[in-house]
Image (tube, rainbow, N blue to C red; front, side, top):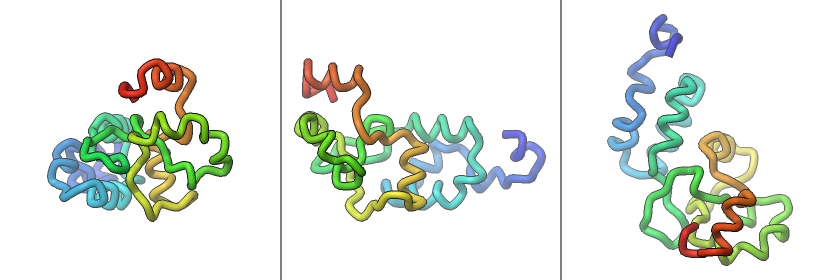
Length: 133
């Protein structure tokens, strides 16, 4: 916000996050738009972007916030560690087939909050009620 106020960062580049997301044609357009100006995003912009559902899960038409999704197990270093819970989170796996580890897109999704594994609280909720995800 300070950089925008000082004119160091062009406010039009980032603008209102929710409006920018709405104006995008889909998840890939959102990622391309914000990845291109990620360095200009301030803390508030990141928080707003994290709060907006715009990503899809594999095999689902529903739209999720990044923090509600997981990376595909084939992208993880220890994918076998997640084998026991894979069936419980399968409807919450990020639908981004060509994603590779350590790419700018991967880092972007990590910063948005896409997770490798459910935390303990999430895992307990999934086991108790798999539909809750």
